[in-house]
Length: 359
Image 1: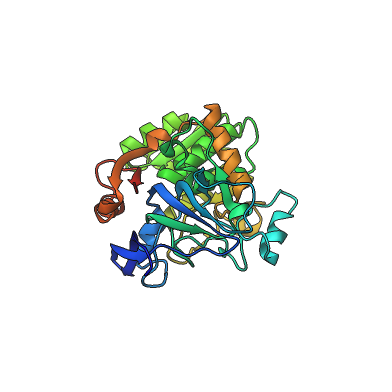
Image 2: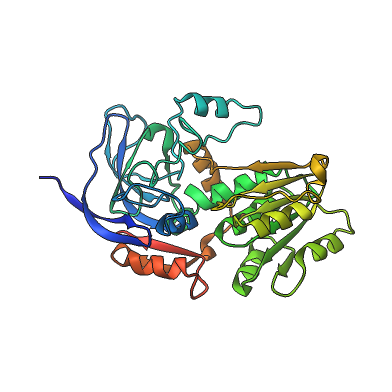
């Protein structure tokens, strides 16, 4: 009889519930990790609401911190009992799309599997991380040991939001001395702000409508915070840049309004780096797009994964250059994950990220 574990399962739109499931079996290239800490992502809320389709009965979640319980026979260089993380995106590194992406001139982003988003497997195409145990496929490519001295909460942002937010800054091609606007200061936007600072932006303007998030943005490196409830954000950013527009804008919410504002504040030849997960079609306004003659770049990023990306992100944390610990505002045991979803999906009580402690 299979050993059982607790797991957060997608039941139907509007319902994710804690259920009993068998502890996963592993193949020769896999690892089984005992999850110690995980979290809930905005994408999980899209799944909860039925805005992103996944199979009924799937375990959700894609941000694991844990301990290796068992290793497949082919997995070398790791040991049972070792603390590890795995990226939210766990590419095989064997598909055409993945190898093509990895060999791109810009270094690639190690994101894709057999199709767009195919590298995103946890909580999408296979059972995910909001459980007591998680099977990590292609483990040798995707497990990254946690350095001694770093806590679960310090590295909890690395698998997804730190990698995604930093990718937004990297894709924006930010140069030393640039002025950058970041639209929305949820967890991804805050990481994009931190990434823009690390990339050398000298003026970072952020936009949100929640006071606590604007305050947190200053901790992450924002120079100017704008409350969209109080000012015409586009007019204010153009004024702050002397009419020139920003060198790069980062959209981190996934709404028509924020995408359009990010385009309207962009200088000719600037880059709009889009990180938001959109749930409806986007329109590109003719005037803001300069009828297609504005030399703009519009780029999207999927969270880069793989053990080398995770190693680099944990090195940034260990160096002290970025501290994402304050972004964990609430803590829940796995048994109360349904309560945690309710809090997080309704954005109550100043929530930014919830640490789900599975042990």
